[in-house]
Figure 1 (spheres, one colour):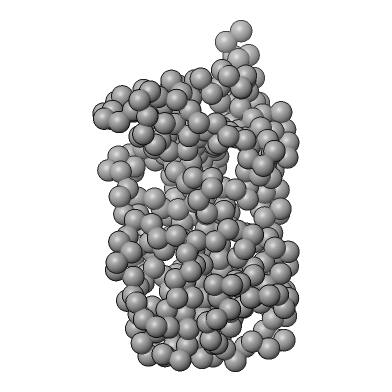
Figure 2: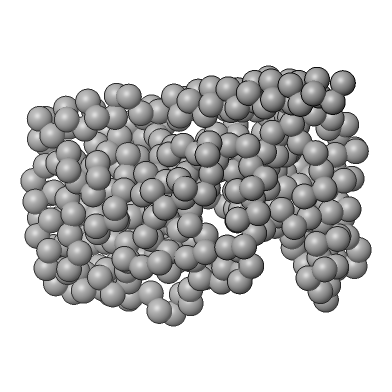
Length: 381
């Protein structure tokens, strides 16, 4: 298996937000080449692939630049041709296809991988702007996939009957990276002037955030300051609540996050409870905890269990409840017993272990597929 390249089809751009795909694929790239084909950009007079190698690693991103005005069939055909060019130009022979979205199956169903992996990170059909054909395309991908992973246990519960070889693999944590937040580090220039107490959030700002809850909590506690870090996506920035104690600091790199987290008193996850959040398993939950910060979250299923049940995260849905939970969380700042419980829970969680588990399951699936193929071949002799 170490000799097989990976062609990954992702709806997320590599340089957008560093998350699950980057954590996993960089680890696979220790042993094999990884090619990440992203969604197209319609900005060109002719169709071409923009290929870039990532930080001298065995990872290449391939971004299709397509002509404006292509219809759906032409878009699919153009990407099919560019995919074939990628395979030819890099001499990709035996490979794994790795899907984060089922939509690229429309232009990749003609290639013959040694193994098909579907890492079902989210329930994409619940997101704003999801294609009407997504549900049907996912059914086709389930038929084609050799192995399926889900990004959390709640998502696994609704997908487990769709495939016979499916496993829940919640997102994990780089404890060493986010553990830097526990050290006394110099505050970031755009944060240092903001008074305490500070309650912070980082992540993509989209339909998954409960902006009304954020606004209400900020209005109830004008002496607290709420720091929001991340890009605004798929929503109009004009609808963001504006108060003197809400501070939008924009997007930050993955490497900068611990320094910002270090300057907070409490981390919050004011997620909306809607179709887009029903099956999420936020990676930031263990990241905030690894940074030593008490966390207050709305009742996202994969946060309630296990983090809420273990007493590691406060759960609250209404503005008064959220304020009360933050007040309790503020008292945990120097609670060594709580921090010991956090460290004990996180002791068996890491991206390295997650990657090793997935690699083991992929290897087993590959070996079983090889055995079946040999038996089938013998039956025709």
